[in-house]
Length: 435
Image (cartoon, rainbow, N blue to C red):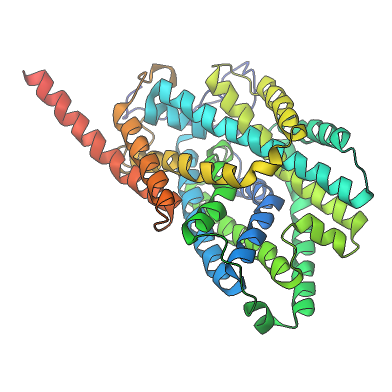
């Protein structure tokens, strides 16, 4: 297909599709949904208890007033990043890993599938480990692996069902969790003695600014990069962008705020532990489990789609099952203890991937679906690969040197390098053809 032909996502759904979520093709017009469905799914994804835990950790290091500024910047960066990637998939009907296939080539697309799918499997393990710890603390259980196994299996069920199952669960869980977080905030104000007392809370200085910003952004950067898995179902496109921009910004900011305010007031960084310390055992268990579920079904869906692309199988469901098994094994083996290093790694490897897709879509493809047949993508698209590597090198080096905001710098360098490398490749090709 050429760039002048109608995009493939404007045709009817192909008969006999193996998976109604179209893991290896553009979502056709007949399967698109309104932006509200995508917004509530992303809201459920953003309501992530480990995000609040990370917020608590950074608050303990920075103090509450400095933390609020850092959280606001991180939320704005994530909102712009996620909304822009969401617009790309809404216009093309492509999932994140399929967009990566066109931007990096078939081999580069496999790397994106391994990176994004692998990190989501890791997050799945971390989340069900949190679930096990929550039940162990609340009920005094020393053995929690049965909870981890049962929770890991149950949370994958809605992902196995597909987009619709995730949407229905999110409509129930998100309002309940929001009410709980507001109540915690009011209790925090009461405990601390007012806003002025909260702002006076100081940190221990245990984190550099660069590391703290990397952690705050990395809590959602891998999941946010995969917004295309859900935004591809959405129409109209521009409204999707604004809903994601406002929704992700507000919800991510709220999650970080709720995590920080609880730490500042009670000195407890773990949100689940905070609930239990207040005596909210039954309510706390119910609401936090619902919250973790809405996050983890999105997570399982994401690694299912990534697995389908990696192995070129038009069915995400076997990979939902396989990734869930791996996630459970990782959780039982104690993966949750390594979350700090995991967040730093995510904050350097994943953002440049989104950056190169943004730069390619808007500055090379001129904001349109290129119409490329997915199976006909080149093995390697060198301009995209080089731009991605430049972004990763920037994120790694600036993080090591504690300069600026490493994830943002990785995104910007990759986005700018994409059209520059593409133009350079055209010049080289033209010269070779004229010789």
